[in-house]
Image 1 (cartoon, rainbow, N blue to C red):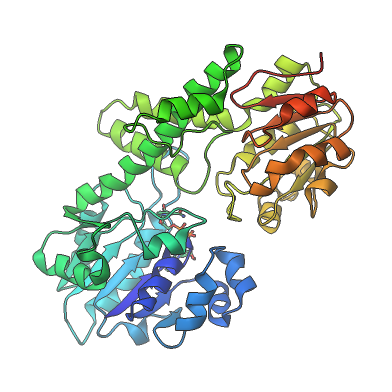
Image 2: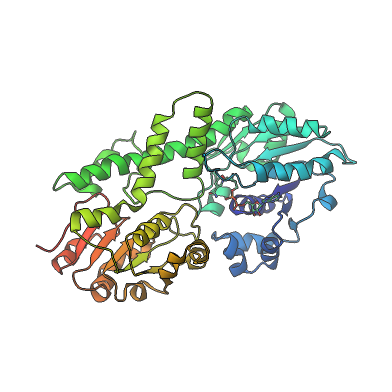
Amino acid sequence: MKIIVAGTGFVGITHAAVCSEYGHEVYAYDVDGEKLAAYESKQRERIHHYVNETGLPEIIAENAGRYLFFVNDLVPVIEGVEAIFLCLPTPPKTNGSSDLSYYFKALGDLAPLLAGRKDQRRVLLINKSTVPVGTARQLGKFLDERGVRNFGIASNPEFLPEGDAVEKSRRPDRIVVGADTEEDFSICRRIYSQFVNHVRIHYIETTPETAETIKYVSNTLLLTYISFWNGVGARIGETFPNVRMEDMKRGVTSDGRISTWGSYVSNGAGGSCFGKDIRSLIYQLKNHGQRADLLESVYGINEYQKSYLVDRAVSEAGFSFNQKTVALLGLAFKKKTNDMRDASSLKVAEALLAKGVREIRAYDPMAIAEAKRYFDPGQNHLFERISYHGSVAEALQGCECVFISTDWEEFRGLSRAVEQHLRPGGLILDGRRMIPDYGYLVKAGFHYIAVGSPHLGPA
Ligand SMILES: NC(=O)c1ccc[n+]([C@@H]2O[C@H](COP(=O)([O-])OP(=O)(O)OC[C@H]3O[C@@H](n4cnc5c(N)ncnc54)[C@H](O)[C@@H]3O)[C@@H](O)[C@H]2O)c1
């Protein structure tokens, strides 16, 4: 099938690449020419600079020029197209509602091309972006008013987790398609033919509105579960003596009805979707006169969690950050990605700078280039106090405190590096419970505060 994928960010390029693997003729379209040139170069580093996903450069290298084409002009490719996937940004506005301006800008550009097609075969616009409930229908009206004929609209939300995008795109848990007509469902079935009768993958056909809600309910439920462990589990572990979080987790999740996924405590969940989607759903419900108390609490718990260890350092260990040097280990919002959107590290750095630290010595195996964009001294002169380092040991040099913010595997063996490089009597703030042998460090004279445990210090 001839397919256009509009928007080649994380969602779009992964989807375009995997669709091309199945032999569709895919035109990946973006307004960002540099990004397209990077994909077209087939060079791993250049591709990873934009989307750091295992396996993506290989699929692009294999299929570019055969089944996968990069275009920044749709005029030459619009004839004969059967499906157009919309993978466009829908960032939050300050009031939490979704900003659909990128989305409607792209559609405004597409409309005259679709209206002017010589070949007026049915074309299906398939929405993969996360958009407020009712947007698919709004989109239909928008195109209809601009003279586009013989088109359908489908909602096909994307559930990819960053870090495992290619794998999950090849083997998703489910494909959800919301459409209005049999003709439109059948276009999607042809696109996703390898999944339609799959024994393990749920292929769900429903209304466009239901498909839109499935995305919001999924993401907010996941964040609710994470926030339950943070807002209840962590508080219990920090309050009552002798509570072991890891045993609590195993005991609770031995019940088959309770998920093991997300049953950990941490300094909050970041990424481009959780915060944005929960805020959007809160806005949508309240905009219709509904209450959204649970969602508001979940959002609040998650935001609080991101940097609250900085306050615990002061209240429980009597630590003063003023003029101190602090190592910040982990900048990406989670391991295996360089993505820093809504990362907890952003709030940690902000909290540390507000407390007057002299220097933040940052290390992350993948996200340093990205971090430099976020911590731009041109935007905030305090960011001049952040320096970047090539290893844990280097970041720890001369520090009185270390904050572990991302769950990179290499941080699990930190005890030795801390003992060797953190100043004697220094403070470890463990946002990810990465140091199982913390008792050893406490004996060696360090202070240790982890999410879910009380402050431990030398006797
Ligand atoms: N990132 C995730 O983990 C994830 C997962 C599931 C769903 N989503 C949703 O998918 C959507 C896209 O997310 P993303 O992370 O891929 O975003 P992104 O910002 O990484 O990519 C969006 C791309 O769209 C391009 N673009 C902007 N305006 C355009 C236009 N007029 N025409 C063509 N291209 C244009 C941008 O240049 C960019 O390359 C969002 O709604 C997001 O909520 C994201």
